[in-house]
Image 1 (spheres, rainbow, N blue to C red):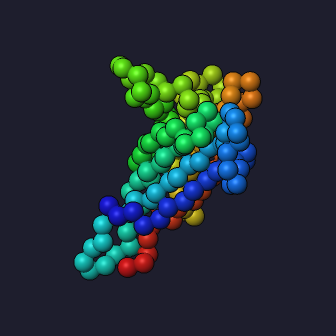
Image 2: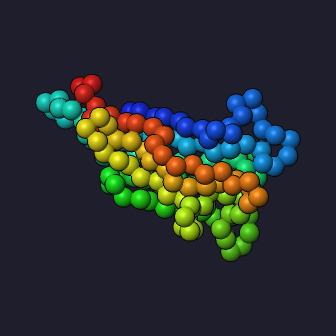
Length: 150
């Protein structure tokens, strides 16, 4: 696989000029990297194989708390894992990661929707301080289903 396209999405409360001096420091950032099939000989269009995602939560940590996952199938909701807090032993869920589900789900979800116009990243979660949870639902970015640059 070859990574050839990266896209970044920020929540609506993101502040590009820096963090607040106190929590909540900032919103969320999602970085997605599209992975396409290997180049062939003779050259053919390369198909989208998967999308690597990094969900970074800046609510309680100005450096961000990161969770990674890979979307390999279309129309399947993937749970956004709560990353471990490795500063304690044994590691336990990192409570500075505030991304949770909506509608009674414990974990936030994300999926890839394949259409003739491309593959769209679809999100469904809430995040932020308990007293001020923000809900994010919908499509945030699109990747071509194939790379025609041979």
